[in-house]
Amino acid sequence: PILMGQVLGRSGLDWLGSPTTAANAATTCKKTTLIAVISFVLTTWYFVYQFQYVGLLMDYTANLIANSNESPYYPPPQPTDPTPPMLKAATFMACIYIMVVVIRLRYNLREQHAIPERNCIGCEDCCVAYWCGCCTISQMARHTADYSEERAYCCTDNGLDPVLEKA
Figure 1 (cartoon, rainbow, N blue to C red):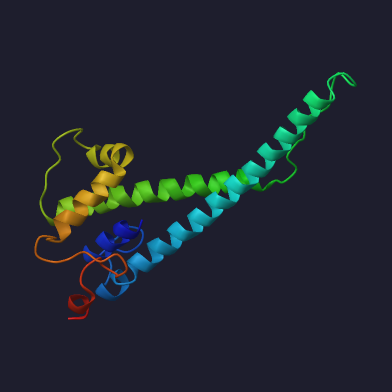
Figure 2: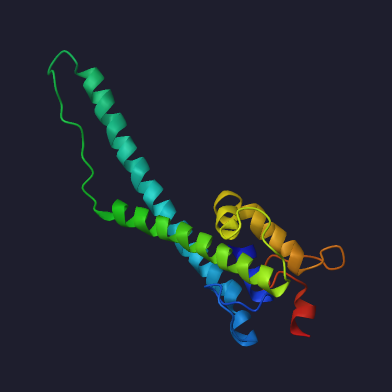
């Protein structure tokens, strides 16, 4: 998402992949990074919850084995927190967001540089974003900057030299 935000900004697009002003495009990377951080926190929260439930199941199994002669059945623990479905939905929405923005970014770059579709005419952007999202973002980054002439930077708004960025 950080590189995606940098390429969006270089291409004059906002965080939704729509054409925007230069001032708005300059903040695109910050917005996509914020979305990525929120998604990461929610996903981590979900997995922590899952591991806690797995721990309950392991305790249940150990107790069942230890007391197998005493009682034939112990009911397994049930999760009581209603949060996981919401976290699953948030993670799903973050994935859909990234895919839709990559489709829109790729479409806009093809339009800006007059690059025709070669395969899957009419749905190539969608197919490439779905099956090769990371490679697609990397290719678009190389298409919008010449890394043989300028160094890439991770923590800048457009991924290029911060001195040149202000010029």
